[in-house]
Image (spheres, rainbow, N blue to C red):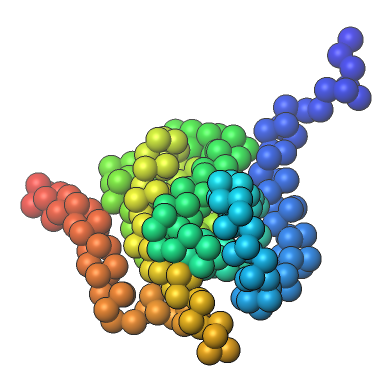
Length: 243
């Protein structure tokens, strides 16, 4: 006989990683939101810089690990973490550290969601008929463009952009590539803001996080969005002509 006390149901095993992320994320939202803040970075800046100067590689590893955990569990403070990367390591290699850690954290969420729900949900969508199947086919035909769009558009929450691809059966390698490349524009902008925090601290001010919506930043990003959407538009036009 199977020992039911030591062998949890397969369904529970399947959903455990995603449930763990959700639970830790909720707990972290209420317990860490007052600590992972700009004020915390400002108050501890001298200690952080001193540790970086004496243990650079250790600081890089610890910073990236903390960033991965923040993203993987959707904890508050991702923006502060990005600013910290710029403050500690300059725009480059700070942007590389930020983007790499964010991609790893996003991949963890993606895998947890796909393992828990994504594979079965994608299979059901594939075997269904009518509108659901058309939506799935439309996403499959334009995966590269869709993935780049949800990364480039500032209005799409990062957490949502990690879950949706898992639910529609996007291959892991394609998710990783589009995530890494798609978050480069925003990652570089916020890392550069963090690189200038020394002067902001000296003036007793707070950083301008709305800089990404300023025309000289937003317009190039929107241009990339248009390029990402172009294949979708062309396919739609060709499809109508074929009719």
